[in-house]
Image (cartoon, rainbow, N blue to C red):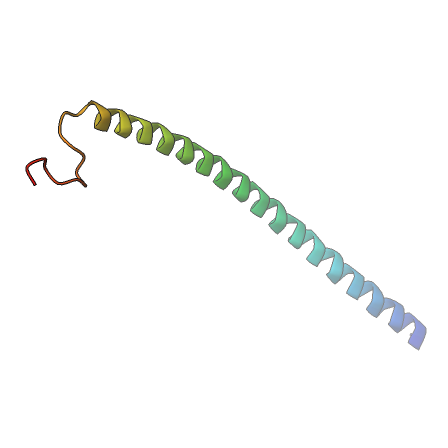
Length: 76
């Protein structure tokens, strides 16, 4: 085996390692993208639920006859 053949084999081995690395990185990126999408959906769902609960709480507070908790009673 001459030096040129050895260099070609080393280059081929390096290329294979790089291709494997790229394949693993691509899989990792796809997994992270899926996780991010699921997290975004969950965040939107929770944001919507928080909005509904806030509205419900405000309606209950508005319907109450007592003064809000952060104000002193009227005799003060």
